[in-house]
Length: 228
Length: 228
DNA sequence: GGCATAGTTTTCGTATACGATTTCGTACCT
DNA sequence: AGGTACGAAATCGTATACGAAAACTATGCC
Image 1 (cartoon, each protein chain N blue to C red):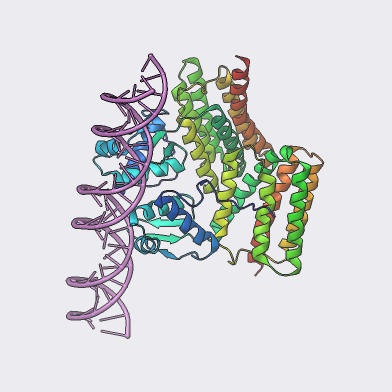
Image 2: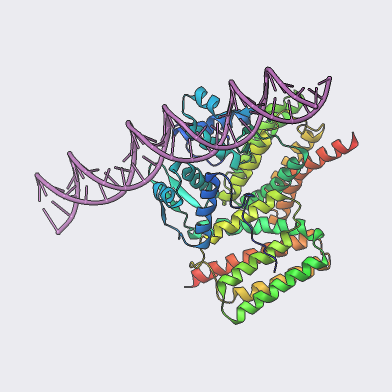
């Protein structure tokens, strides 16, 4: 099937300056979870691994810092950015707003073909619920929204969405993810969202639904942590 | 009076690494308009001006690129980012959404004291209308919203606001700014916004009002350009 | 006169080198 | 034993240097 992978900002895929390559390489490792939060990123070591000098690596790290994937302390070094509950809240809240707007803006441009594709992805997600497969589920979830955002008329907003996703990717398999029962609700909300788009609901309704979709995950986390 | 200056992200004011200093220096020149859009930023030249080597300057430029204030082309160099009508639309639309959210989130935390301060700023803006003073007006406009956002509970959103403002700062005295009559409406919308906050209007109402406040400026520009 | 082309200049990209700062370990003193 | 001071190691920050790519210029050809 189509690959809806998102790579946030950078268009150049693999080739490019060494700084770009280093950026892509380190980012991939962070997003994939090879480098976990707290992992110490030593410039010289990364440079050696890649066969580059430290200069382009440093540039890459600083760029990742700007995106919030890495924290950098002067004369000390870089570590993969963790995400504490507060940061999580900020990120999810912001993402809720951004995704809401992105969905509402995209909605009028989404055609029947897109809807069908989105439904197919959602069906796969439903499938993931039967066999417990959180990793695949998360991936498909992004695919689903990527279909909706494919025609987003504002690239700035789309970029913010991707940044948020990347930020959350750090906490793959962390305590935040997979609140029990939330995944099932999520799939239903997807279908609900598709119906709203299909029937040409007004922008405000769609925006609110998309917002709540994200906010609900945050709420689920919050009630979970306060209860235990 | 209080200085509501915003500096987007960086906390370190003047001192810091040379890279930070270079970042601050170049950014200031761009935002202040000393470097106009299209201005060619030659690394070696800036480095010489600051008395640094090119390495930290390069890092600073790349950081500015990440913020959208500078465009960078491989093996060619950096130029101060212009902002064409499309970019303007994207930025304003995004800012409309972000400011709307920021205002709604901040509203419950805004007290009578803040309202009074905001009204004072707005009065000064009204004053600027009599004597034609666009530069001061723009500055005060940011001060006004800075008062509202002072208690914004989500720093990520606040950061996005500042980024948008910086982006727009590039086009100081450009064709986009100061659509006739828009400024006067803006002041009234401010007062309207304050009343909504004062009377504890619901979040959705406040958000929509704040959104429209920004969107109206965009609309004014759009109708102006299509009419002539 | 206009266009293609080769040579020159400018400017970027990155490697290397070294000084500065922090961190960590060890010895010493109380 | 605990804490402090000193020294060594690790790591970052930046200067310098050089190769590579693009932009510019001048020359020759049509």
